[in-house]
Image (cartoon, rainbow, N blue to C red):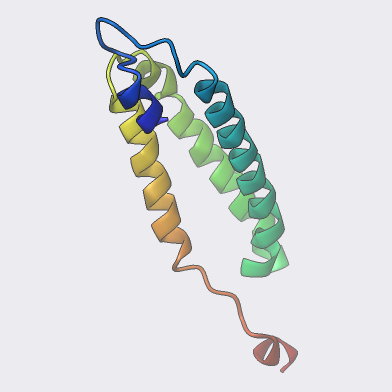
Length: 111
């Protein structure tokens, strides 16, 4: 998204209309990626947490996601690259945070 908005001068005075097909393709890929992330979230939660806490973890995550979504309309109204940079930064933070998730190895679970 950032690349498309930068190259097409999307927020400038004379936006370039030539790469109009790029935006729907990027949007579709983004939507599919978000859907896959949600599916992986629900599948992996039961591997990362005991069954007693897994539902609570999903509930807390859903609540925090809804809480953050309250600010989305205000950010979306900004007429610059700020919304794209915010989404990119939050995605990067989530990517780095997932590096610290660990599951128990199969040998330790059997004991």
